[in-house]
Image 1 (cartoon, one colour):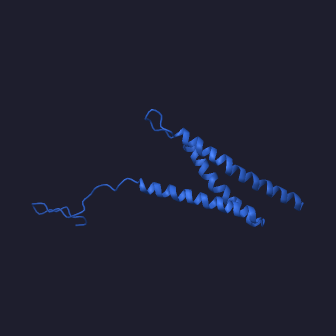
Image 2: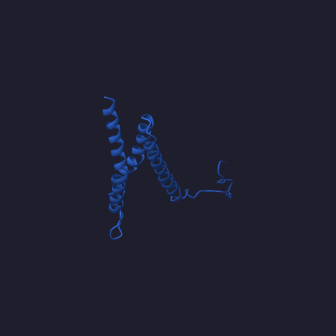
Image 3: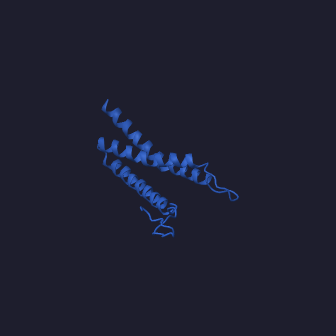
Length: 125
């Protein structure tokens, strides 16, 4: 029974690694191509592919680290650990890009404007 479990865990880790190396980049490519603007129009048809790529790209390494560390497989733990770090770097770069492209705050009063007639438009006043 122990040998069957060892083979099953090895096959699952191999399947997760293959999916992470082949399927996730394929989903990213499909999503990128589907989101390409055609004739100046912007489409979001590839967002589902990119969402799946993001979930699998982060989830498979996380599950792989947990399973390989629990079953004491140092080679697989290193592989999935490096994959998890790469997924974290991509997520951080995406987050930084989103911050950079955030729209500016709406214009408002930044100083006190005195009006004749006794009123003013001072912020907080």
